[in-house]
Image (cartoon, rainbow, N blue to C red):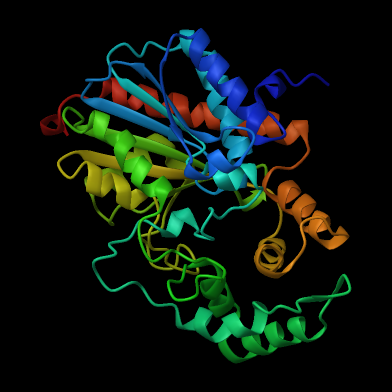
Length: 370
C-alpha cells in the first residue's frame, strides 16, 4: 500500500529539521532559527526553527507548533513539513501563518518529553511571580516511584508496583493521574516538573510571538501532540472559559472533535502552565483560540509506566545499558509509532483541522462583526 505523505516524516530530529528547512526554503518562507544553548556542546546544531508565510502584518494569525513535548515533535514535524510543501494549495496572502518547529529541541534530540532541565514545557507557562500550583498527590507519590533502585540488575524492583497499588487503593485512580499529569513545582528531579522559572524554550516562544503583537487581532494556534486517546484518533483540546466567544468559535471550527477542559469533569486532572497561557499573555487585546491537537498511540497505563521509567533513566540509569535502550525504544514507539499507516492517518486528520482553521480565519472579519 502506498503512503504518499510518508516522505514528510523522519526518524530523528536532525532528519526532521533538514526536511522542514528544505520545504520552507523551497516555498521562499521567512526563516528564523534560535540555536539552543546546549547545542554548543554537541557536534550538530539543534534549534527552534520558525517559518513564516503570508502577511507578517496581517490582523489574523495562525500558529502551528510542534515539539512542545520533545519526542512528540517527530509527528508534528512531518505534519508541518507536509503542509508547507503543499502551501500552493492555500491562498494565505492576507493572513500570517507561523510554523514553529521543535519548541523543545533538546527533548526531541534526546528522545524525552522533558527539556534539558527535566521540565515538562507544557507545565512551564505559569506566573512564577505568584505562588506555584501545588500537587499534594504527587508529593505523596514522589518517594514511592522516583527511587535509585527502580531497576535491579535490569529487572523492575518488585516493591514499586505494590507501592503504586497501595497509593491507588488509598487515594483512587484519578489521584494517580493527577499526581503524574497535572504538573508539580517542588521536585526538580521528579515527574511532571513545571520548573522554578521560565525555561529557555518559553522565553524563545514569547520572542517568536513578538513579531505579531502589533497587528494581530485574531490568533489561532494548533499545538501538535501525541499519546492521548485511541490509536490514530484525534482529539482537540481547548481551555477557553465556558460560554466565552473563543470557546463558541472553537466549537464552530472543530465541532465534535473539540474537548473543552474548562468543562467540569472533561479531564481527570486540571493542568496548569500549558502553552495556552502564552497566547493570553502575548496577545491580551486579541481574540485567542489556541488548541492542542492530540493523536492517540497506546494506553494511558503505558504512558504512566514509561514516564516513571524514563525519569529513573535520566537520573539514575545508563542510556547505554540494555534497560536504557529498551526504555528509549519503548518511549519512541509510544509517542511516534513505527507505522506508516498511523502517520498517513494523522497527517490527513491534521490537514483537515488546519484547512478548517485557515478557512475560518480567512472568513473572519473584525471582532466587532461577531
